[in-house]
Every structure is written in structure tokens, then in C-alpha cells.
Length: 414
Image 1: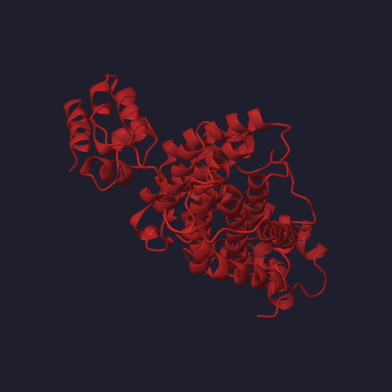
Image 2: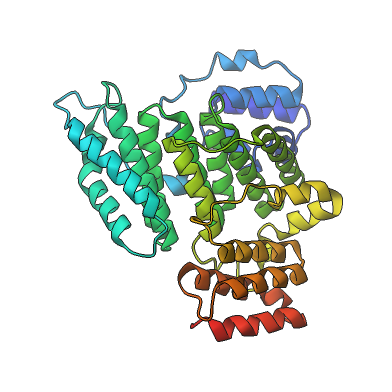
């Protein structure tokens, strides 16, 4: 147990507050706080500030006892995720394998080309990007973070981010995580806080979608910390919603509702904001699309979607229907049809309605999708219809749900 962690625990227990109570007061998860107090996680200045605010007690004396803040906050990722990390960017004092200007221009052109094609069904974009990374990631890891290599790190970060999204799309989960962390490390080395946070947002979503909500929450909170001063309005929305989703999956209704309120406020601030053409904006758009297209979900099991966000959404619908509509995406800006087809968007809406416990509306949405996708759905559309089949088991006895399930079986070759 570290000195500061022990002091935080002593201050909390002296106030008669449990870890669960402190979690409710600080919006950090109970396991996260336990790790801070036992020394399993590095205590930073904002943690001390959160305790001081929750306890209504000045803890300035603890700030002076904090160790120098890690230069690389990515070292504070969850232990389970750390096993997938590439080594930190090395600070070599020898000759650097520097990139020529023409190489950097080619890398940036490759990123532009691959980003425009990353949702294509063909393998060419992924092969081209992963081939570049296999050759050049070792070079990037040998470059010092100082000395004007920001452009190289930035180009490598975007290509690794694209590789992560494409790996996730084809359900290569381990590769998706490895590339996400490589991208985050490179963008962090380049000093790109917003891009790093955006990449971590995608990693957080992958963890949530894989049944690892506690880790997803920690990564989302790390992203919020990294971009606390520089986050764009749209990034703030994305991070607040990810935190809400994590609390919802974990079953913490109070924290879920608090995070949804914050997300709603951020969305109001972001109203009318349009993503630009920066690397971070492109990454954020890709992450949003990835959440909709996503890999085929088979967790937590057929007919068990309520174990994800369902219970929290249904609770919110009963207590705050106004927030439920915002949280459920009714106020969100629709994505371009070039990225998400109307059929796929309708299936996504139908799946969300299942979690809300409204099978009739879900049937309406999936019926719309079936009318749009033709006689023989293929690719992602077929995969997402099978998702609906998997997730609608809970309502299979509802006649209209049973009918649409039969239609999906007949249309989609299994």
C-alpha cells in the first residue's frame, strides 16, 4: 500500500464512507478506488482532488507527497490490457531510423486511401496498412519522442488506428486491441492528446463489447484525463457516453444516470458541431461507425441483452424518459449513408429497442431494414440481422417477433 493511497483510505474510513459510497461521490468505480488505496494503481493529483471534494476536506498535504506524475499515463492501463501493449516508445541515444520526407508523405497518403476504404468488404486496405505497420512499427519504437518526429508518430498512429478498426470489424479482437494501444502510444509520443483520447475511446468500446466493462470504464476515464483540457465537444460527448455505457453494464444505475446527464449536457454544447478533417476527427468518426457496424456480438448469451445496458436503460426510461431519448440516440446526428447504410442503421436501432424492452418498435425497425436490404442480405447487413436473431430470443414468444425471426432465417444463409 502506498503512502498516499493509505492516507486516502484513512481519510475515507475516518469519515465513515465505504468504497461504494466513495464511488458514488467521485464517479470512479469501486474496484478503481480500491486499487488506488492499495497501491495497485498510481495515485494522481486529480484522485486526491476527487477525495477532497467528496470528503469536504482539504487534502493539499497529500499532493506534496505524490510521486512525480508519470510522463506516460498509458502505463496506468488495466493489468489485463497491459499484456497486449507494445513496449513504450524507446528513447534511444544512438542513430535514429528517421523517416525521409517522401516516406512520410507516402504514409499519409496511404492513411487517406485506407481510411476511405476501411469499411469495404475487400481485404486490400487491411493488407496494405498492416504490411506498412509490420515494417515500420519497430522503426517508430526506436525513435525518441523528442527531436521533431511528431509527423512520423502521427502518421503511424493513424495507420495503427485504422488497422485496429479493420481488425475489430473482422472480429480479430486481439489484433484490434494491439493496434489500438500501438496507435495510442504513438499519438501520445507525438503530443496529440485529443487523438490519443479518441483512440482510447475506441479501445474502451471494444472492451465493453467484449464483456469487460470494468476495464472499459477505466480506459474511458483515462481518455477523459488525457484530454481534460483539449477535448473537442464531440469527443467529450463520446467519452461521457462510453462512461455511461460502462456504468450501465456494471449495473450502477446512479452512476449511469449521472454520466448520461453529463453526456446530455455535452451534447447540448456540441450541437451544430461538425467533425473536421483532422486525424482525431477522422478517428472519432471511424470509432462511431465501428460501434454500429461492430463485430458479431455473442456475449452475454442469446436473449440476455438486458444484461448489457437494458436494465439501466429501462430504469432510466421509467424515471427520466427525457434523458432516455437522448441517451438512446434519438437526438444524435445521423451518419453519412456512405458509412452506414439505411438498412444497417435500422438494424442498429432495432437492436437498441430490444435492450429498451420494446419488441414491437424493434420489429418495425428490422422490418424496415429487411425491405431495404434486398432478397439476399450479405456482408455486414447479414451479420447484423443475425445479431438481431441472437438478441431477440428474449422476446421470441411475441408473435410479431417470431414472424420477423422466421423471415431472417429464410433470408440469411447461415
